[in-house]
Length: 301
Image 1 (cartoon, rainbow, N blue to C red):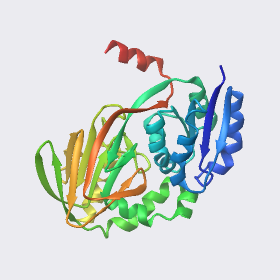
Image 2 (cartoon, rainbow, N blue to C red):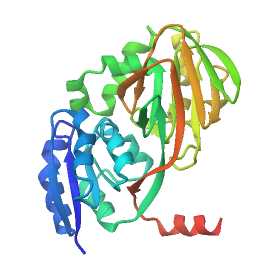
Image 3 (spheres, helix red, strand yellow):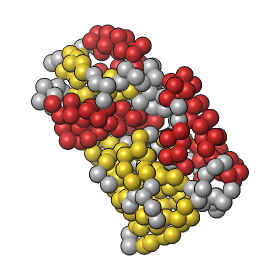
Image 4 (tube, rainbow, N blue to C red):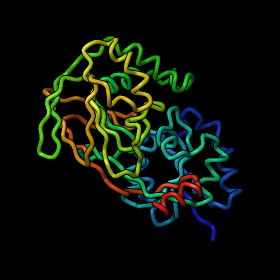
């Protein structure tokens, strides 16, 4: 039976326009019937998904993490399975799910139809896939040049971080979990649901998008050079042993600051403190590559 798919492609993503024709041809050749929609306003994407909820069997989204984040509310509400074409700059969700960057291979993943239920995070009323954070990462997001991002890709994040990090300032925050209150002086607090964020950095070395937990870390460095020294460990998710980094795990956190702080989720500023972070277990279905050896291991364990 032919499956009908709603295809939403961000033509302004790093590879959106140039790969759209290739993706359509490949998906049709694999037996999918496509209904293509597009909009210049990402905030409309979830409404488009809601409109087509009874007309399609799945949703295919072509774009980066910001485009996926713009669609997440519609996916949660309709429970339509998600296929991902990684056309963005960082593609951290695709990396977490081991979806190949090659568009023909990503199309094969969708057409094969092997699916997995994944967790989501929620900050205040907004769901997120990867990481939500406040502090330094918000400043990087605010100063990231879109043209440089399209041209340089992930390197644009690193270049912007270098410009921002030496001006980073500590701020006071209160973290609450399981009835405990922890006061910190920090330059960044990040709460991760998936494994990767920020162009391939790992929120924790054992984080997974279906482990039914949130991973929090707080960077409590007094000087910019300490953060530079920490960076290799932060990138690999090996930062838990550093004295300048506080790490916590749980299903729910609350964060309070003296003044409202903007919060960046999946690369987009979505809300402000005070903020409540919650785990939403097994929230949506995503098409992922099939690894027989891994599945056999899961069955045995």
